[in-house]
Amino acid sequence: MNELAARLNITKGAVTQLVAKLENKVLVERTPHHSDSRATVLSLTDGGKEAYRAHEEAHLKFYGELQEQLSEEEIKIFEKCIDTLINVIRN
Image (tube, rainbow, N blue to C red; front, side, top):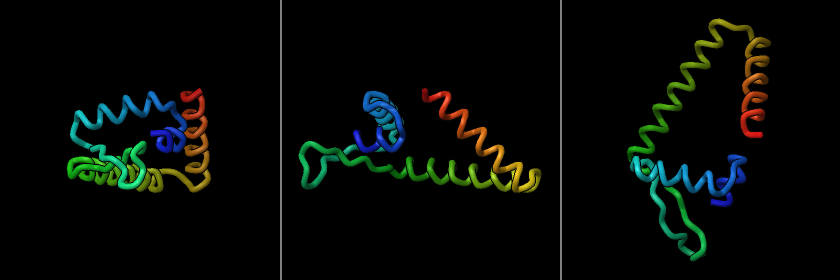
């Protein structure tokens, strides 16, 4: 959970709540780490893999539509705005 919290730049408590919600939806599962009894391994279930693929497809479609409507420079500005918004929301 610590590694995931660091990667997502959120608290360990937030990760724990998020993982619990994903477990309740049967999208992820926790298993003990094979060599570190203090650690937990998170894995996508089949449903989680399907949800990931659907999200990835939607993401690619969205960027494809952006490329059709915006110039490369406009896309860079859009991405910078999104990054800024995410940073404001996190802090």
